[in-house]
Length: 363
Ligand SMILES: [Zn+2]
Ligand SMILES: [Zn+2]
Image (tube, rainbow, N blue to C red; front, side):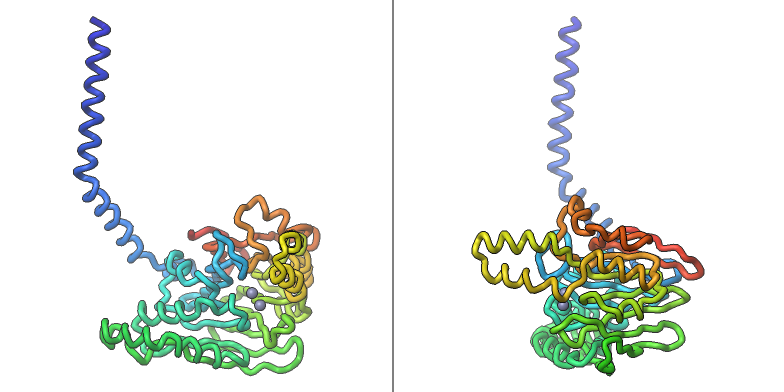
């Protein structure tokens, strides 16, 4: 009798399993549609800038370098000051990150370029396109940079001219006003001194300072400092150890700095030599001269008296966190404050009226 009831239970379970499988088959599509509706509604609703507390915030839309890293887009930093937003550099894949970070690209006020190495401008065309198409902007995006910015922006505008024509023809000028397509170069004059600085924006609300750094033979190369509501952040771009950075980053709450770890790059260099990949060997031998080691960046942070050091534009790729210790080397010995190896989607919030820096991940 007991044996019989066990079989009955098993039989009933089997029937239920069949019903569940068949039921799921029948309802798979409506379930998927309901889930999709939920995700689309969430995506449409989200607005990163509107959800942030009043203050200064930086988001890493790209923490990588030209060397491919499956976990990192090319260099890109989103800076939010109150309700205003700026993007420093547009590395490969960074526009997709901005969108996935729930940033409404149509609200972007301006792009700031540090220099014209390909990894810093690779996504500029996409960023300008998204800002125009999402926001129905009737004026092109201001793109600030040192001398040379006009060539770069005009080149992207020309490359995207056909695309702009297609979209205006398809969606109509009310949706995508032709006058708002592309970028408008805004060259910022800068003195020749190694620590020359110039104001990019200073309207009593936000102050953005551009200053020269050493990335020889790339000249000019600049970094940016943002001051807003008593808080301050500095975004380095690419540079070798520069006294100019120490001077202009003085007292900043947070320094987002590039970093190249020579010990790890040397591994690539030696392996390239062993496998007779001559160009990779040559290039990996050259690049340490115009970047900053994590240890040097920590010294810069210490001398400048900044509160928090974040590495972005990390070289070489660090696809697993296990590598972070090897990347940082002895950096912690040179800087007393917190150090973070940046990852795509990281957001650092500096609320107004506080000395806090709150880190979280948006991706
Ligand atoms: Zn560079
Ligand atoms: Zn670079």
